[in-house]
Image 1 (tube, rainbow, N blue to C red):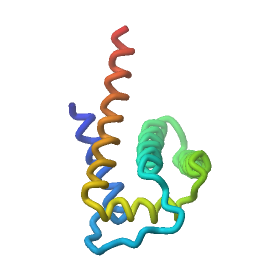
Image 2: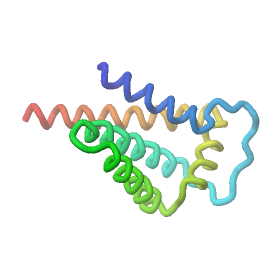
Image 3: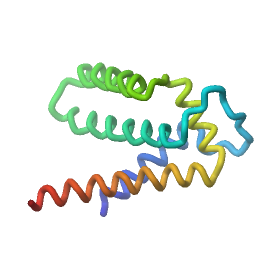
Length: 124
């Protein structure tokens, strides 16, 4: 249960740092990423960050920074986008309370399911 709280807080912080608190209307950007793509990128970014935190105990911090940077570059390539397009799309969706809540809820639910599946596999 404690793990779920950390996941939720981490996601909220990431979203708010990217402009989720803005109250002003955000213009729909050119090349807007689909909401599901933004959700998938946020989930992958969270999982990458979690991996980095775990691996930092076993490796040199400089190596981990380099690894993380490469992983994030690869992540944006995976979705055929870049950070700027992602950020504009994220800001657009986060400016709409219903859409931002849906994205956050979907990510939290997916992470909870991943953790439950992992726990089930450990029991087997």
